[in-house]
Image (cartoon, rainbow, N blue to C red):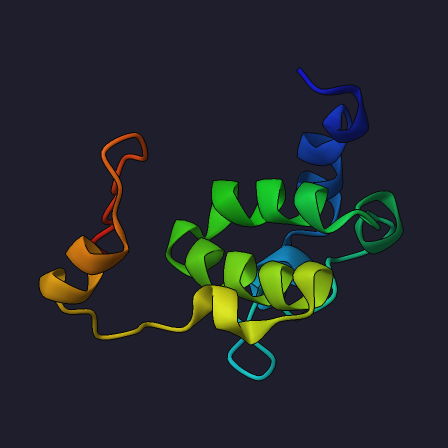
Length: 104
């Protein structure tokens, strides 16, 4: 077990209502809402918060990752979807550089 999360089961048992409110929050969404109790400060690193989010709300992890990329890299271009033509990719390609296409 990760040491930062060693008491999380006890925290959830002691404040079930707060965790349920966080889990089901709509405004703000869970990835943007503060974690219950001391866990917001324990998870001051966004990666730790995403670990907790992944355990409870895997459906919101993609949104958290997008927010993280914008926050850390400060460039929304990294998450923008672009329509790409294979012919354009081929023009920019070289025999010694692989072409990787990520479908999402």
